[in-house]
Length: 303
Image 1 (cartoon, helix red, strand yellow):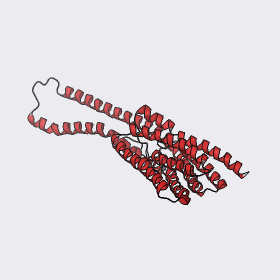
Image 2 (tube, helix red, strand yellow):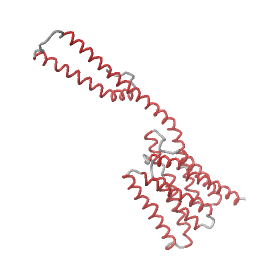
Image 3 (cartoon, helix red, strand yellow):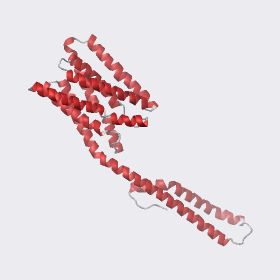
Image 4 (tube, one colour):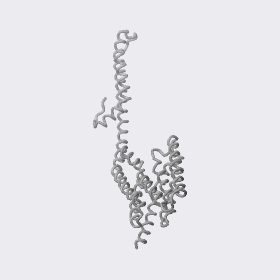
């Protein structure tokens, strides 16, 4: 009975894990379409590739590890595709950094572990040795989106923390924790229990900042519209002032053919200069003044 139940839970875990591994497809479709990774982070995919690679090796060593072998083999293949796309479309500086991480974490480190296990570790402790490493890496896989969580809190936007990825990590951690309890595999159970807790935290943060993201987007749009109107009003006011000054000058100096005395020109020059500078300053700085007023909660626009 327990064996049948663990098999059913393991199959469900495989399905959910495949959903976890396929959830970034939408993200990378956008990356390929825009030909840019923008602010997306490559660390989650690099660490997941490392984790799935070693879990595949763990499944090969474990006599009862068929379910672990199949799901992690498929996951490693998908993560390799994601990492490749990330490397292709990342900016130049991020591309170099990503290439170094891939060479170190996805080539050098797992290759060294496999060689060390097969050549130097005793047969009776091979499974324990690889299991401990896999458990540690799985915790790292679940913790890797913490950087995205920090960005969400800082920017108050969930744009760069895909919901499906967080949701399926939550489900994956929960179902594999149940499976590990049934088969008494602590190497699978401990990291997935931690993953369940971290996945829950991600969903909570997503729920908190999802509505704030929409609100900030609407406010930003309205702020831009108001700023444009303020600039137009200020510019129109400046034009009206110029027209009034021109009419006054024409009425005052109508019929005068001689230039103004040099004393009068010197006297009026600072006034005209200050008026011109004041107008230009208001036109150029109205956006900044208006932005500060919005932040301070003021509703008026200074002339």
